[in-house]
Length: 112
Length: 115
Image 1: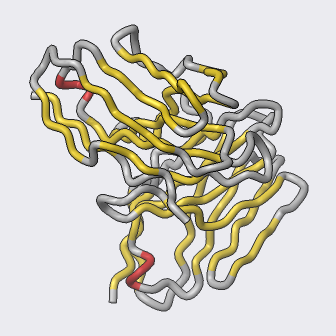
Image 2 (image 1 turned 180 degrees about the vertical axis):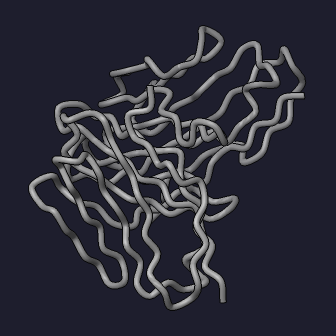
């Protein structure tokens, strides 16, 4: 049973436009959420996170939005750049455990 | 600072052989995770340790898989006997602590091919 879901396996966006990557979760105990970026042949690297006490966190071109009632989070990249082309994973954690559960990933392609 | 170090980076083995993947977490981190990446399931959590103790191994696919953490700076994931369906990228990750507020840091992965 997939507790963290990324329903879009891929996304293509024109350079300079906004990229929106979505993630849904089912476990209401999750209280910390992270986004990771992964280039081919490399390990995932941390991008941005958000605690459940917030509904938005911004870091430069990257903003994560959390909608707890809908159990939904999204990552916005503005403006998108070709170097952003990668696989993006969302992850969720329950502070009562040590688990980080990841989604299946969305492959973003930013077209020059 | 050294990140999470995994070895081997690539392994090709024949079905039925034993495979051992190794991980050195970031110094000072007390949580260690083993993940497997596949197309169908994304990053799948296999097992995680806290202070060298296995906390949850419910993600380990079957008895052919085992993991150990004999000390704070070393962990192994063993597959015996290996099967072609075990072919995947295996990631080790570590964290300074569990739960909210902590980021986990990944190694570069061990690419396993079982033929």
